[in-house]
Image 1 (cartoon, one colour):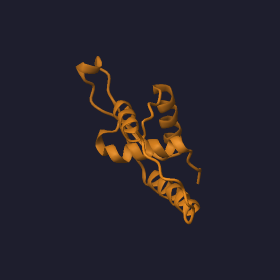
Image 2: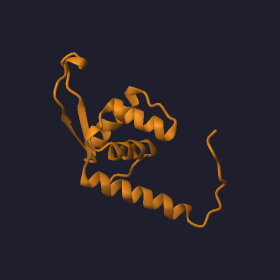
Image 3: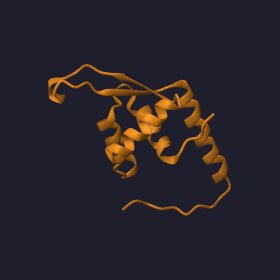
Image 4: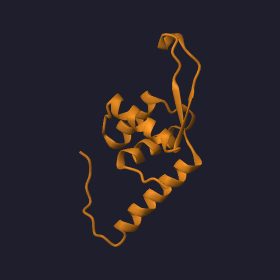
Amino acid sequence: MAGLGEFEQVVLLAILRLSENAYAVTITDEIKHHTGRSPSPGALYTTLDRLEEKGFVRCKLGEPTSKRGGRAKRLFTVTRAGTIAIARAQQSYRSLAQGLQLPEWNRA
């Protein structure tokens, strides 16, 4: 099974948190809210496309809206394979960090 990069993990976790409301704008907002990072649209879409190619996310088109000029949102959901991949990646990080004395830090 293909591994996950750090940003791929961030995107998958944001989609999981958003559930049925995961599209580019809300994913970006969720990432910014929880990490302080503001990914560019290009970086986000490249990552979403890569995750879809790996079979870790599925995309469907929502209903077109006049607010979006008649365009439909691309809504994303995490697949079972994506859920397993993120769980394995997170477990690997926990295993590597176990027993280490990492410094505490706070965001100001």
